Image (cartoon, rainbow, N blue to C red; front, side, top):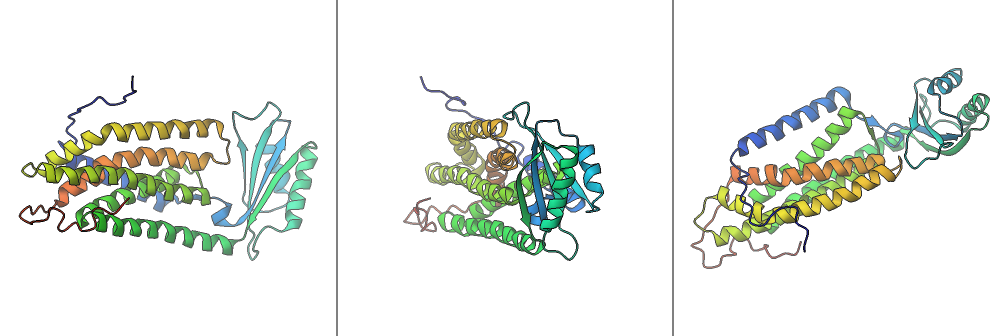
Length: 322
């Protein structure tokens, strides 16, 4: 007996209120963009420059005590957070101390790091320093530019690929869905002020690939059904295509989410930001493949000229392997 998350031969009408779905998506993008403009992102050391010191102690972390000890060094704004993880033992109390690079310096000096470790030893003699990571502000600025270029180039490559494989209306719908996913992901990180570092950029690029794969599966079925149902309106063809691929879409999304949720709970704090971005990306990517990409295709329309002798005319790149 095979497991089915969606029954066979579903007949959901996804486009009964397609304008409403596009409106909701547009509103969410505006909220995400507004949050980004007002709050910005909680950039990690990768993008801000500075030093992160990870500490571990058998005694509970007291952020106030840590902060008072470091305050005498007059290092400016120092961020101290306790790290919670279900995999930690009862005597494994971890804290992350982030020190931004001082003015005129490429990174926090070794002398400053030594002083921080010394003052923390006075309040927690049994504290250990698990890792120390430093990134200069010049390098972090270059990383921001490189990250933006990487995301833009990925979306641009998708535009060309879909345009060649299908038609420009399909390409516009797919790119709109990808932009929607990226903006909403950046927006949720801005709204919740979750640390944004290089791992999140990797997650964004992964989300672009995942969402594209889901969209191409739907669009491929749409193209087949446009030839099969030559007289039916476009909204009916889109509904048929999405219903036919719905079981595959949900099965892929649910199995992916099961693995990601397991990593989020048990994988540790180091990869938690990346996994959270992936979970959010799978959810919005599945949503956008149905309610954004396909709705945009319905709005733009598709020219169907069946008087041509070759049904593939106008789609000369249609058989390029994905």
